[in-house]
Amino acid sequence: MTATGPVVYVVRSWPRLSQTFIVNEIRALERRGVELDVVSMVHSGETVVQPQVADVRAAVAYLDDPAPRGRLHRSALAAAPGRYLAALSLVLRRPRLAAGYGDCSALECFDHAVRVAARVREIGARHVHAHFAHDPALVGMLAAMLAGVPFSFTGHARDLYQIPSSSLAARASRATALVTCCEANVTFLHDTVPGADRIPLEVIHHGVDLDRFVPAERPTRDLPVLVSVGRMVAKKGFDDLFRALATLSEPYVLRLYGDGPMWDELARLRDELGLADRVELMGSRDSDEIVKALMDADAFVLTPTQTEDGDRDGIPNVLVEAMACALPVVTTTAGGIRELVEHDGNGLLCDPEDVDGIAAAIRTVVTDAGLRRRLGVSGRATVEADYDVNMAAARLEAIYSSVAHTSSGMEVTA
Image (cartoon, rainbow, N blue to C red; front, top):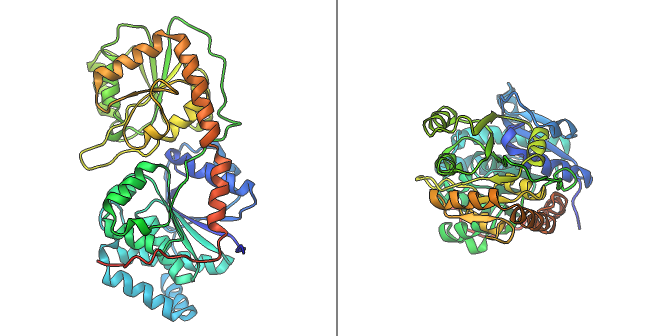
């Protein structure tokens, strides 16, 4: 049997430039005929917006917009008093459900959930799915409890690693599925979360649009162009990349696309290392410009690491996009990257923070055009086999279409 009705997507902010994978996922589901309704906890406040957002058909509601909260709570209590009191009791007994990474208290998440549940009832939604395991998943879980519909969520990186394991267990115990993008996250969950062997885990890779990210002709030129893309935060390892580049005597130019809190620090480091004429900081750009940049590049470089507080990437989507364009990649083994990149098979791998190793890999790729072509062809084949956004959407649709609200049976404890 399958359920009918829309699926409500709970996200932290919308639209978010660095979360193109969510937009791509929504568009792929809509192409399959899945009706979606997006609820964003806050406005993103970003001025650069991905062009694909305009193609999303789903309505978008924002929880930071004013609302008649008292009336919504009274309506929720009247509609399902048992469910309302059970959800309220849970957050009062378990305030640490919102501990760790996140911005809202458990009671604030309950307040948000009342609004989401009202939306679920209004549109006759069949399922609630949340992206990110921290605040959005807690809001989604509580909303599903209030509305009496199934719930699932996708955990990515910091949102998994930096909330208490008992909080993850509580969310997972009420979910039809905990979706994640890489096996490294599955290993983390089994190592840290009580009863993780009973969590309904689904590994679904973030897919890319294979008709949009396509191979391009790349003539050999005297000045190889390297491209990197990412938020300027510590886990991306851009400082290690700059130090590696500073040791190279071979000609190259690097174009780094992205913005973030480390912009000024990285700009200073670039200048201190004498790279001002070789490293161009391009700032935030939409995905149309990123596609053009990948088409015009000779190689893609990204050198993530794990920070002291445990933050790290899963499988960075920009690596998948670069490989879809048959662009050779130089990267590290941080997070789940080894699931995507095989050293000397479809890319070059280095240890995180190994500046000398990163420099050697970049030197190899900029001086060997034949290697670049071989790695690029293999990278495209990898993405075609395992990272097609339409394949990922089909698996997600199956989760949302299940009538049965299966529970792992895990105990919800403090």
